Image 1: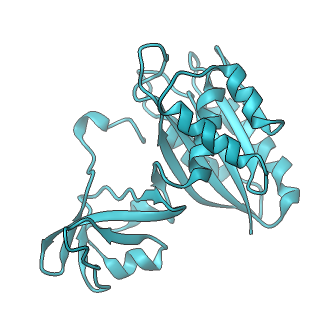
Image 2: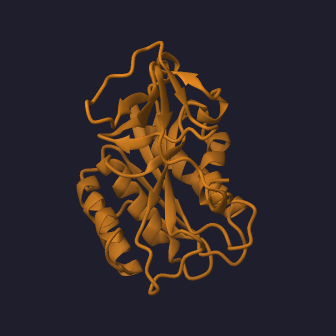
Length: 245
């Protein structure tokens, strides 16, 4: 299976009813025939007064599975149309699309890590993509920075959380460990004794299932609540209402 990383950033405005995460999730409906959305990862970048951002300075990367490399250009074309159709006036949208076979992905990972700790510019993003698709679609085009960072961090595989993965919004709460594993979500406990949740154990997600991206996999971190019962950490707070909508 051929993987394509599609990074989106700065597609919304402060008073919008949706964020970049939702735009990235909607991309599933715009994919070329034969392609499938594996997941969408939200990546957190540096929050600093020197950086203009909408609410959290996060960006998103869609992981797209394609039959073969010939689908790269159609995915790019679909992503361009999608961001132009759904990004909001007043935003500074950016798009980055990179083949999973691109030998430059390691440099993009380094760039993404840099974006979590220091201020960088558009020229840095243009340089690091090294010819892969990078485009701005309005405003200052500053979104190209976060879009490239989202691709790099997602390839890195050790940061971010999935805001889409196998229909995660359709899972019941609570849900069994076995059901999560069947969907490809690894359940890992953070208790002192490093217990291994059993398949018939139950996880309380509080209606907000968001696995972390760890070692390139979807990992749900839980803590013990009672015998055979776990609860996921990092539940959504009221102030985060629009962040992933």
